[in-house]
Image (cartoon, rainbow, N blue to C red):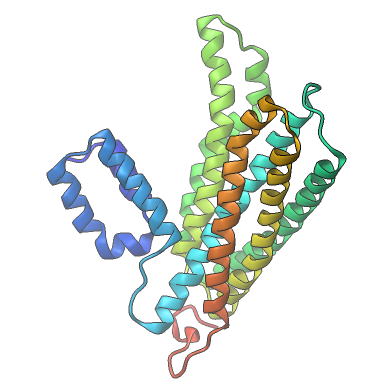
Length: 284
């Protein structure tokens, strides 16, 4: 039997990967055991599978999977950069770490760019939602149910943190106030990506999502640039030490978004005959 941690790690792989290699990988885990190192390897492998998805040989389906993977990766990257911005602003608001005006202006530009990208993503989500409403294909949206149990912890987090103290009971209340919103943010980043990979939108909607991902990727990159400027221009050792994790996250998110969005746009713009994306069952 495979324990819960290994099973969740296996479920973290993209649907396309699980369709092709899921049974073999599960059998391998059963034979070798599911220790902590194996679970860690599975999670790393799942990340690689999302960034470099396994594509079928058929030209149209290959391009479809490429675009779906691109949209999913771009969404997760946007969420990572969006979460990093307020944390960085909070750190730089501390008096011991004065922030140069240029850095503040770069952070403002990054913030507006991320909000604009959010509007683009919202338009894409509405287009996908409208198509699901027209076709009745709601099964792919079920992963969003995972947001329901984590949303209350996000809403009541300020009240929980207000009662946090060193008292054992209050300590765990405070921990819930921190971990609950973190779980909600992770779920909000992951579940829409899973929905996109499970949906089979028409060629028109899928191309719209893939091409709009380029603008989102550039918005994420502005956050990465702002973080790099913050790290290099604020010479205080303490400030650099604190901002290093945020810098790592935003730079990685920028690179993943640019690479994946570029591949998705290339697949969206390439038209091959006689095979066409519109031949799928949900095609327009």
